[in-house]
Image 1 (cartoon, helix red, strand yellow):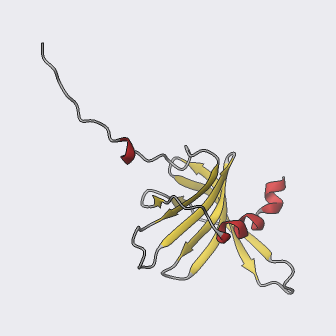
Image 2 (cartoon, rainbow, N blue to C red; image 1 turned 90 degrees about the vertical axis):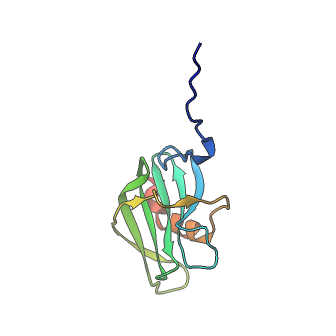
Length: 130
């Protein structure tokens, strides 16, 4: 009798794609190094949509987005651009087409998303009601 062994698959190294994640709130970064600038994406997956915030601490740029997950990408992106409000009562948003987001080089974090996500959810609230 001959026994053959194949390499064991390490389950902790298998990451789910963004598309296969269950509904919920998530946070991803491009680095685990805390003391250097990083890109962070916070998002909520709900039904077939992902709504979130993409902020780059290196450039100081941040924007809100909404799109559809496809494997490890978010496609059909709509970007919400914050317009300076005339009053402090309510923020106005301008919607525009955006570029796909790829998660291949981003790492999931355990911590729950913060205020950036909730701000972005309000930007798309009229669409979410449809």
